[in-house]
Length: 192
Image: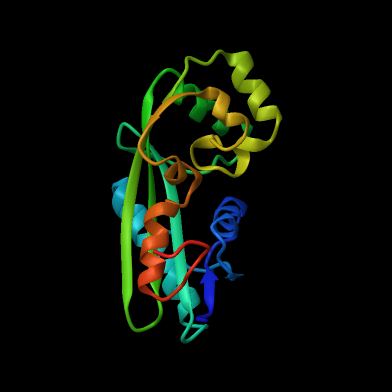
């Protein structure tokens, strides 16, 4: 069986890969995540997923490496992870009652061949009052998540509807990712 490495420290990605039955190692990437001004959300996740995978691949010859990156985009502006409660509040206030997009980029390489793709899911929030936003921030959940919310946790209560792949919002479009991994000889519980 091929050695399979997730170039990510995300507990959600680890959870999804385990759920699908993959045997993998976790080697967080040290790739530079600096991007130029004005880059689109789609281009950003595509580039960062590639950088992460290639960074880990350089140190792990012959292994299949999975790199991912997820961002929230509102009106063309990328909302990353908040740098404090004030920024989390501002992000959640801006998402209140509006639809935004979540982009996840995936890049897989074995050092010889590579494959990448980007998925996008539209998410609409309920109108949020300040008390709801503050109580959500007080849980600590928003602080390490793009857009300051986690759809798989308490953040699900803020979401009115989604259009697209739920797992894209969690940070790993598992359905498409599984098919790509199968082309690299990496198998989970299901034959694809």
